Length: 466
Image (cartoon, rainbow, N blue to C red; front, side):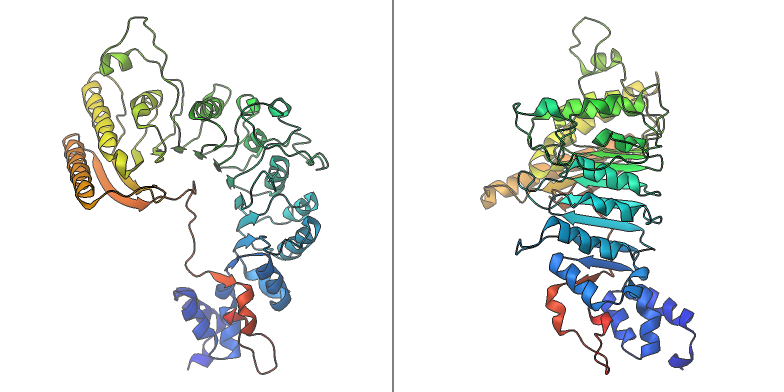
């Protein structure tokens, strides 16, 4: 009965199975079923290291690569024997066949050779790109010129996520030899001009990609003054800005202010819907010179700096300075924000709840008189456990802290109910990744340990066991 079903129905059955092991078991029934399951088996592939990449190219027929929709590729080489040119040729050999790829994640050990960018122009279906430097940027930096050239070469790119990208000396000569020291790439002047961007391959040029909708940057120096003046040619809907470990909080605040100002300036109509911040916005300037001793009086004299008429969701990371919460919210008072999500470390739970209650009280007081977050519908609170804490409390002290946290959260939820706001409280484990990837659970993993994979009678590797 099963063997008589058409391939379309077999594919529909395989597509409904979860996890991937179940699909692989189904594919082992017979050769026709195996062929029908190929689009599911190879839809989502992860290559953990460079050795796994080599094994994939060696054992997987090139015609199977066309089934890939999502590829997570790492070029980490434990032996350290492979050159940049060799790695580039290997990655190019795979990507050249990925004609249906929609999402690409590159975990690189510094920059690859600029010749790689040529193959991206033919990958017209890619809408999501993540590039991460998994190496020490002081040893193997990931050049901003290389990254921007790759991003700008993808004709349909909508979502960009970057982690640990290094500034180029060509675009940041003022940083050379200055304190605090930041690594600079010095050998990327050979990257050719882009057909559209020309030689302007600094990070601010990302805003010139017309198809771009989402931009997430973490662990990257954002001090380029061109962020404020570069043309914004995209309709950006989501912005997530992280911090740079080599500089202090004031520097990160200035960088965030500069980028926010560019996106909300009069020369562009902001389309920003979602905003993720790890640092506060600068304290509002007062119209009156009279000292404002009360919070309400202070905010009544402030002027919002940013015009974001489409902003609906605001997310604040666990590293956000809690004491600056109300000031930051003041800057965004003119935006139609519907949802606020605040993350904080468990130790800061009591203080964070108090700041949220102050904000809610202020909103309730100002709503009858004017527009102040009148569209707000819910507040989500996420308590994050920091696994990097160097000490551990004794049991009695921990129980006391848990009681205080529970009491503060209960009070916050009661305040939200009185204000007719939806609320939720959840817990999470601390992660240094700025953006969580929406990973498909059916992920095909290829590693060097798969050398003993099953084979068909003719000796070929049975690929669903890879």
